[in-house]
Length: 374
Image (cartoon, rainbow, N blue to C red; front, top):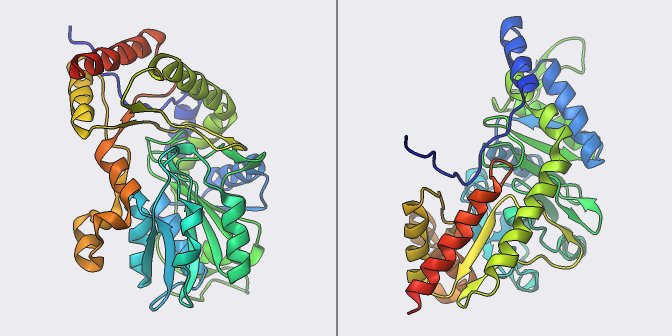
């Protein structure tokens, strides 16, 4: 019998959560029902924030946040050069221009020292991405934004449960955006959320996600051109059970990250992720950095040979076809983003891993690097 592949991640769904999904399907009330409202309330409580608006995915969360902030043609939005393409795509879809900033390699988050030089009279927002579950220096970014009167939108897609100096990711800015894709620490299949402390912003987001529909008068009216970015009720039914276990999952992810650190930190030519002081990490992804892109290829091939899934972590967006053709970025503009793209590797992490799986992963990496360095 062929051994099952050790995957990068795998959703951990309880029998109770699955039964709740079946109950929704049996009810016939599939969209914007009691589970959406319940999960919104529970998520807001967990994050200690006033308002939560569930949407169809994390990209929708970013898109609606930008629209609610009034971002459009002629505006500029600052974002990291290395992350998932959805961040830049959401900016493009509003008609605004993405302005890329390089990253720091220790955690793959935006290099905040490079932000101010990118601010112009057209800058209307900064998208602060907490990459791989690491918090970027959100306090510095917020202070800079206050000085220049621009909005901060947090992309906390990979950082549900992460914290900066004790405060949860997603709760610092104008809005915070989350994704519940299966690769995330909590999943509803597809799905996302926007959180904010501003009641007017929350109401506008609710209208935008549901065709511009407004219920505040005597009946239903349509007060702006909106979208169908709603989350289904059976998706939302998957969330609450996972949220109750989230802190335990984060603790296990951190235990596994410590295991990787203790077994891989001695290897020459390999660099492990490191958080800044004050950052509480979820480790949504454990991301290795190699000095040599050829070594990354050798390690990835060796892992695949043992039935272990691995993948690149994210993308150097300015060098992808659409963005390269439109903005003509040169490699020297974003050297760290390009290095992370060319030399980074995500390896399995999560509650689906057994100790013997982790032993196989580290021993395979060790052997591949030792053989490759001879």
